[in-house]
Image (tube, rainbow, N blue to C red; front, side, top):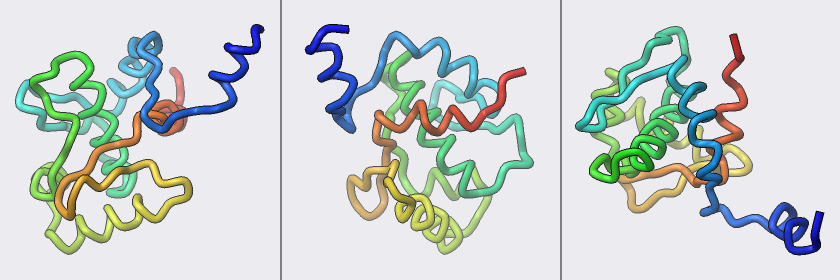
Length: 131
């Protein structure tokens, strides 16, 4: 491995995303959820906890945006409320849980809008078991 390749592996940017792995990422997230053309996430696996669902919503929107830029990678609190079927307070609590994980996988664009840090897509999807 060249010094430049080692440098890229060692010094990472939270905004980096490996486009070459998008097919692998999609095959994993499809086991959990799907997304429609308006960006609404629908869960296949309803047994997941709300905190995990928040993470997968962030990942799903990010990946959908890579396939179709008309689908925003950003997601607002009200969208989380609709997808999760939870109150504003419950959604804020789950977002806070995700935000407080170390390292934080989520960027708050403002109080009501969030997106995943691209570097963490693979880490979240690693939790999904292969069949």
